[in-house]
Amino acid sequence: MTTDPLLLTGEVDDATSRLLRTAGSFETTDLAAASLLPGWTRGHVLAHLARNADGFVNLLTAARTGEPVPMYASLAARTSDIEAGAGRTPAEHLDDLRRTADRFAESVAAMPVEAWAATVQTRRGPWPAALLVWGRLREIEVHHLDLGAGYRPADWSEAFTHRLLHEVATHHANRPAPPSMVLRVDGSQHELVIGEREGAPTVAGPAPDLAAWLIGRDGGDALAVTPDGSLPTPPEWI
Image (cartoon, rainbow, N blue to C red; front, side, top):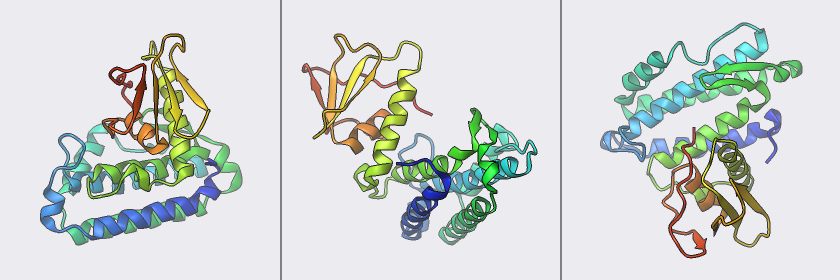
């Protein structure tokens, strides 16, 4: 998948539409139910997605204006905003998601070409502005899984899946002393190596299952290990 921000806007729109359909199906009791993220209800996940859109708007504004606009006022403010929004009604959550998604789309459309070359400060450090649209797409698609409402890694597009798989494998490979493993997608001879190849187990399976396992969203039941043994434990992802 390309990371060209203008080419990815349609992907973000499609992912947002799928998310809104899921969010629109929730009753109050559904929102209060646990999500797949420890300690968070589905309401927390939806509140986070809305505030994350606001955060990306802030970063796009920083790239466009050159002003040091932070993604969030502070980590404490981010946490407080999510907690405050988690208990909203289904209609309020849906309105918040739609409104913030529209603001994000408007901010992307307002970016002059030269602004995409800027570097912005995320809460995890500097990031190229050109990757902000990809970052928002990744946020939507991964947290849609976390709602535990029937959306699966297999529902991801092939392009998104392979982009995520390669990005996460590279992230893990660049960590200090990562567990060694060779990743192989079913039906492909292409391999991704994390750590040292020699003596490393090969983990094979469908690309969506490999990607979801690497980011801690899947137990790896559809994956095969050669030689026989337990799956290695991937490093913590973002």
